[in-house]
Image (tube, rainbow, N blue to C red; front, top):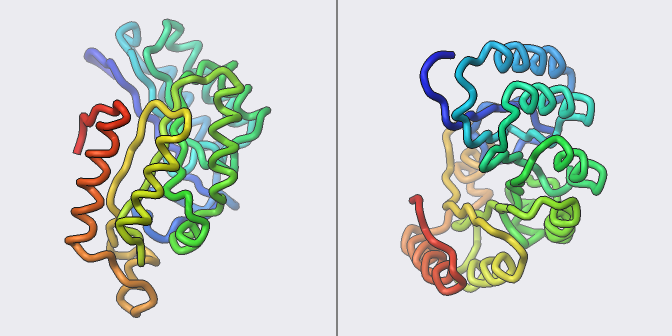
Length: 236
C-alpha cells in the first residue's frame, strides 16, 4: 500500500448466526476457511507501507468476536507489531454473547482500547424478531465486563423502526442505553434490504414495517434525547 494512511478497516466476514436484516458481506463461520483468511490478512498487513501516520484501526464484520482466541491473537499481534505506535482508537466489534471476562482481558492485552457492541435492542422479543442471538441481560453484562477489563471507550448499536415498535418503545430503549456507561451510540433505522430474510418476511406479511411518520418521530426523539445527555451528533 502506498500513500498516507490514517485509518485502517479490517473486515471479518464470519458469523455464528445470520441476522435477518443484514445485507453486509458475511458467511456462516462453520466449515469456512477462517484460518486461511487470517493468514491472508496478516500477509496483507505485513505488506503495508508508511504505517507511522495511522491513528485508528477498526475491526468490523460480520462478527469479529466469532473468531477464537488463537485466531484473534494471530491477527491482533501482527497488527500491533506492524503498527507499534499508540493508536487513538483501536476498535473491535463484538456481539454481547461472545464477551467473556477472558476474551475482554485478551482484547485489552492485545491493544484494543475501544469496543463496539451490537446490542440493537434491549427488548428480548425484538431481538428474536431480527434473529439476534443474545439477550438484553447479556448486553448489559457485556458492557460491565468490557469496562472491568480496562477498556473505557465503549460504543453500542441500537436500531429503531423495528416491526411493531412504537415511539414509547423507542423512548424506553434510549432510556436503557443512556443509563449505561457508554461513550458512543450508533443508532440507525431498520431497512428491509432485498434478499434478506426480513425482506421476504415483510413481503409474506409475517412482519409489519414501521410507518415512515413513526420512524421520523423516532429519529427526532433520538437526536433530542442524545443531546440532553451530552451526546454530540456527528453523522447522519
